Image (tube, rainbow, N blue to C red):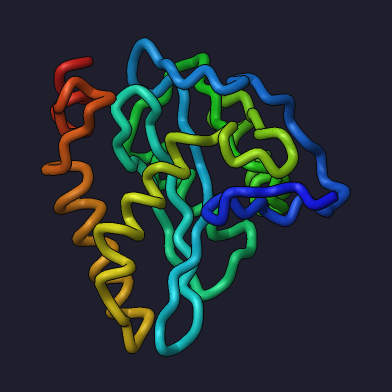
Amino acid sequence: MTRWSHPDCRAADSRHDLPIAPNLLKQDFSAARPNTVWLADITYLPTGEGWLYLAAVLDLATRKIIGWSMRDHMRAELSVAALMMAAQRQRPAAVLICHSDRGSQYAAEAYRKQLAAMGARPSMSRTGCCYDNAPMESFFHTLKVELVHQRRWTTRDEARRDLFTYIEGYYNRQRIHSALGHLTPEQAERTAS
């Protein structure tokens, strides 16, 4: 018997012996205020030079992309760089939960050490269940529909420029969300302050 899976929900490679954090969210995608629950994930984008990997951190309360990193590989430094950007830009609450899939980039010692230094509690999705990180998956779907599938990048640098403009210039500042009462992520963040 073959199990059907959604084509946009490809599980991270969780075949590793690194520690796995419990799923603290259990698909409860509500956050009373910013910087209490962050979601993290990685996607890959085609270019003429090969894949470009994008790690992003999303604040659940505001849907704002608060940290991101791009590399030509998926090693732990990719996810750590996105997390560090988020920590430097925001003021994480003392009770911050950082939720991700079970990929080795999020189970890696460097990532776990950064979470510990921030006082954040790690949380991980169940094996192969993209719905456990649905708002993050939704962002990547939106990114691909609104940008990636509209472009063919010759170089990774071209893709980086477009991704920067999309995230920082459009998605966070101009794109409204029904989940936010038709506010942009930045408006939601200001309203919550």
